[in-house]
Amino acid sequence: MREKEFIEIIKNTLNSNYIGDDCAYLKDLGIVISQDNLVEDVHFSLKYSNPYQLGWKSAMVNISDICASGAEPKYLTVGLSLPASVDNDFVENFYKGLKSASKNIEIVGGDITGSDKVFISFAAIGKTEGRKISSRKNAKSGYKIIVSGQHGSSGAGLRLLVQGKKGPEKFIKAHLMPYAQIDFSKQIAEKVKEDYAMMDTSDGLMDSLSQIAEASGVNLEVDFDKIPYDKDLEKFSDFKDLILYGGEDYQIVAVVPEYIAKNHTVIGQVKTGSGVSIIQNNTVQNFSKYDIEKKIFNHFGK
Image 1: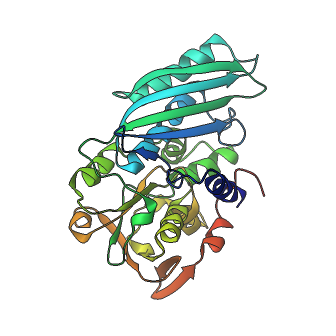
Image 2: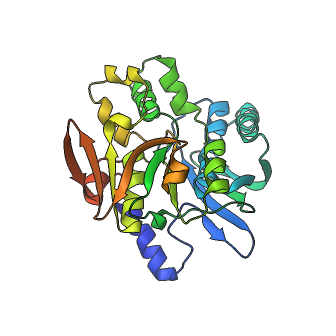
């Protein structure tokens, strides 16, 4: 997958200790910071999203990165590049959606330029005071794997939109207007004492599990039957793939000590080994990171 190859090249070229998680933890400043870009016809389509929905989702995507670090989301800056065809109503409704999603998170600046398509760029800043910050390299043998929310709904929503269908509306809404898991993140980060791993499921549940397993040098064993999902997904012939690989649910996967896990939905445990193991029908199938990367969304189309 070229995105991950490029990230590895950048990390090695810069020789940076900060690159590797979705947020850089700047301990000396007491903040985490994340940068994210959204490109028309790559990450979103104006055929499916109106400006308000686009503003909402753009904010939630970036707030979710801060939540996945364990920090408290505080500030956003927004860069917009817009084609000449975009009118004042588009900008106003985009920012209304952005403001509605952000609530207590302040939008403190940004930039606006012309372009041939809509490009959206965010910087998100989170406060770390009173919280233990996560890293995907911190999963340890014996830890439990917990998740927030349901999985696969956003992937189903995108499928329905592409097929020109109007419902079930709950799946379409899950795709167009997701929610960042602010409360779940807070509960973990304020209570945990040990190092732990946490990611959001922006690129799918299996991608998050795989990245944590790879960075930590462990095996994550998951019982498929324990993964929460909307039972109406079973109307899709490939619903299991939607649950495992359908991205953009913006739920959170955390790998934590047992005393933290007992108050949450546990879907598996950490073992020695590598990759991700899925238990289904009393059988265990192991997936390497290469197996998983072949099935998840590739920004570069190759």
